[in-house]
Image (cartoon, rainbow, N blue to C red):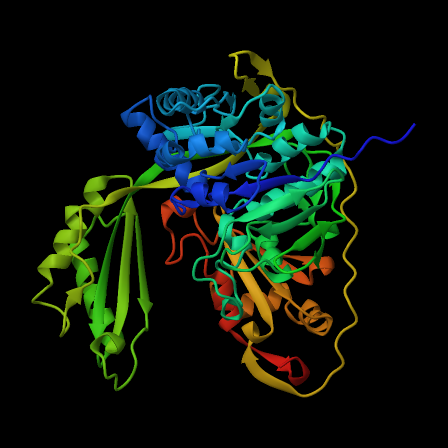
Length: 568
């Protein structure tokens, strides 16, 4: 008796990394080369707040309308090419989006079977506190897998983990079960690489000058039955797939070596990457452990009202001009100033500048308060009234407004068995998806990483860190993460010992008083730093100039260190 033929790899592509990504990507991926499954990630912490406000205006909405418009031109194409589509565009109303897709299919004459996954919306399940707009558990891929096994061509979900868009199709294709932890963990890592679209193919990449990244193609993964994968892209598309671009995305918005999820806990410290040819990177060696007993729940609410005025200070005496207008504004706001008042002076000015804009600095005033009146006319009126009575050259970047609401993101946890994860199959059958058995309490932590031997001492030069290291940074609620990696063993022998948590704080003084945790990934030649509280109450609260910490890593790369000349 011969062994059965192994299942061929599953080709899973991505066509969206966020709500607002390249509109034509769905068609590009369907026409650019062979695919089995096409995924789209439309949800983020800020997106859930936006969809929550949409639902307040119209209970029939709450889903990503862009996805439906994309399908108008691509649904028939996907059906003709037998490509299944899996997207979390259902947001707060996956059932409503599924109904709209069926209606669209009838209009365009596409014979497709549509299913959806629900049960993540917990807003009515308990009292979450005042002003909470959305409360959604992060589900795994088992509901998606159930829909695909039942013959669905299109599966839309609400809040699932980003990687679930890959683990679900992979589990359905290969017949993986909940206990196939290493295979599922490999699919989670591949899903994490795909989830942000062109960030895996050269977008937002530290070493962008090495590739043509004017219009990078969207990524795809060839998933194998053992859970390993090859990240690549369609032939002839822009950008690049290298160990560097994949490493950068692997470090994005992660924390410690255990990457927790509802399907499996993936051990990021076991990931191995290798160049497998032009624009091909192989992912292997990923180990998996049982998931936690709880599911993460993302809560969004309106936190209050904010307003912003940016004063332009030109030429000489910038500090004195800033002090004058600040004192005038504080006097005008009187005895009842907004609850939070923040001033930031950005010295963007240059001495003896030949262009007026280059001779100017920016003084930014941000105010917040639960009362819209406190940040509205009281602030904008005070700024306007200073137009002829303040520093020389007074002007602002835009007319002050009435203020606008801002959001807050919070994370909670619920027992995984208490969430009614449900797959609604193409024929309308509602299938309850059981929770995955959790890890036993008190499991030992990962072994501490083994650091390489330090680089021998030699001549050093004061230079930007970015000459030898790449970085990528992002947000998780109110925290930020910065992944830093190098491309040679010699550089790793230096970085692992020199870029400590204390050195990180000194290089980025904004983090000096915040909790900073360093994680080490020897297999990726990488460090990952998490900075607690840097982003306040999350991106929707717009607590800082770069509210999602997208450029925090590039700031770090621009800071100077004593770097061995042998590395330069």
